[in-house]
Image 1 (tube, one colour):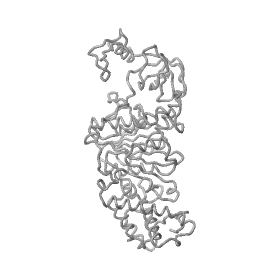
Image 2 (cartoon, one colour):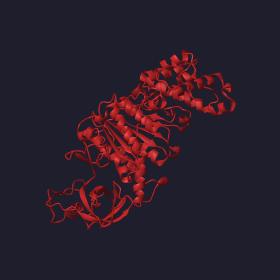
Image 3 (tube, one colour):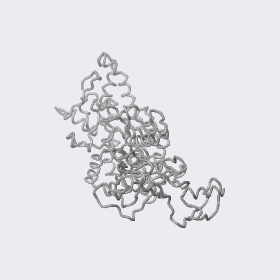
Image 4 (cartoon, helix red, strand yellow):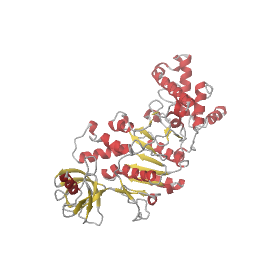
Length: 520
């Protein structure tokens, strides 16, 4: 046991002459010893090799920095490179992932182990700011105060006994989400979809809809985003007047994989600070979580690990779990997470997609076919789901209307092949009636967004949950069977459809699907 204590001291860079052991020795489940360093004798090494974002560093054995410990690499131009130790190669070498570009870094440069993990600035100092993974400002504003509190980005999730799962519905004003995939205050929701189906637009609309009614702190993590998107987000939040209680954390696509890999942890550390130490509710938004997984795969490949399924890193499940399990509610304060997830090649069975989906409460699936037909938001009512769609949570009427809406639309999809071959007229009277109601439901669940007003020229709509349920129930009951389908396209409540139906000319035409077999 004593030798184990000295090995622990050596691992922290404290030699027999550089520090002394004090306190007491415990068993394997407790701390081996308490250390009180007398002198600051942090290990000093030098760069042995540079392979892209991976830097191999030699240290005098056996004083190797620990895994996930931060090291400072002197670059020679006055700006140090912060890196994070990821692997011990042998007794005298480690491999670290750089959190900024290593272009121009030379072998032999001095490296100092900090003895701590990477730390992120937290607290009121970061409110209203756009920062990178290490806390550097990127909004052309003054640097953060030197005395701003900092917290390590690596942290264990709260114990299950402390976690609380709320069942309060988080109203968004988006009809398809509120009806079919209700979000929970303190839950996790993910928007899954391929390229160009509207994930970012939907997340931006949810930000716009929630910030006005959300009393708390908003933290946005832009993972692998373009610089244009970060600039637009900053300008939008300034225009809406909510930047003073928001934090933007970006790891852009032009940055090394280490920055993209650790940006969500920085954002999560800030959210945990306001949740645990300031006792405030936090709205956490991430776009795009798949880029986090992708950055982890890049790091894994650079470290020389053997790839796993579909080329992903062998640590995929644990990396996703380390991120997602920290998004939790404790006591009466909550972290509500909304995440955008890119689906490569529209393959919803991709290992990264399934790993992320296993941790969320609500899954909003975006359909490329619906996007091609002009049905925006392109939320698939059949594949989308939520654990909150339960009569005990949302009420009997809400659950019944949502179930009936899914059933009618699914029956319509089953008949689409027959319609494409023979036409609607060959269906039975009952099937023709259900097809008409399904098409009206699909169009009623579309709506214009506030964030797209400049592109569409249509003012955005926000619809209360009760109005959405009442509108769908009226369509299902046959009240609207005589109204033209174009009256339901891109509207808010059912009152707008009623006005269109009774007007001489509709203000918008519903798109005609190529495979419907029926005109709009």
